[in-house]
Image (cartoon, rainbow, N blue to C red; front, side):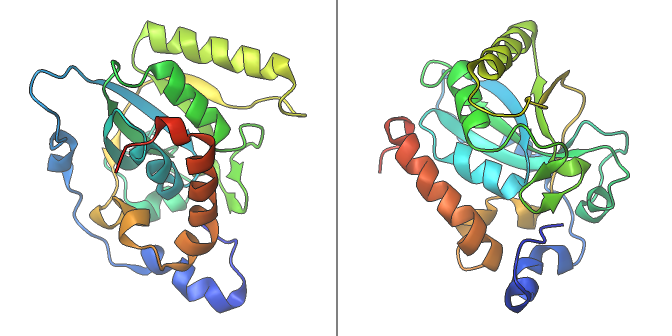
Length: 216
């Protein structure tokens, strides 16, 4: 659960959790607005709350679609409530459809490791649980190799004073989250968690990666 907020904002923070169970829009997996003739690739990352992860990668030039969802677990088509119960084995993930001619997998990895703390086990800030674990799900051998190399170099660099606990695993499954989780930050800028947690992160992200952002 996203438990960072002071008492006065608790109701706002848990708006998403309190919403009734909704049908999952499985069709949206194939609704990327991709120009004809463009060859795309897929990256799948987990770095804590998928509202944050989605907001970061949506802003990158060359990224056509980001879908929030659940993956890596043993329960088919889980609900948000089931994942929050910490018994499904799933992580909150972002499925990123991108044009490798505009942005490389290496650049996506850079964004991934610079937008969360990869040294905390099953935790990002006050979001605690296995669903918030740091994980790269690779779709092919090249992605695995690049992720392993980047992780090793980052560990060796001393950028973090603790070991990186990010796991690098073969892609297993992905289930889109409920519709109300999709495009969450953009659609709910006034919601408590968005204003006080995601917005400052996005503002910092846009400064650090200003040369990689979409124009306009």
